Length: 115
Image (tube, rainbow, N blue to C red; front, side, top):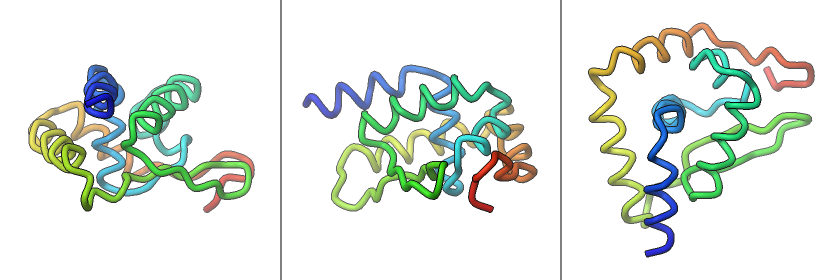
């Protein structure tokens, strides 16, 4: 029950829902999240950490940067349902559609960021 409460709390923020939606499309580094959502590095990193701590994300270090991806949903119970809910709710969301357009244009641009 503690995991569910932590996950629900993590989902209580619009920025984190937008990040999840982007990461459901593909793995990203912080600079790609920044570009896709139009947010600062600090805001992106803080929200990625909250999602990671709540059990939503994998972190894979690559050089100086970390690549974030959605955790495998097999046997994860409620996580899979939450991912489905995010996708369904955000399918018609104009902000999410703009995030995807910017994601398509985003690049791994930071020094040492994997290309």
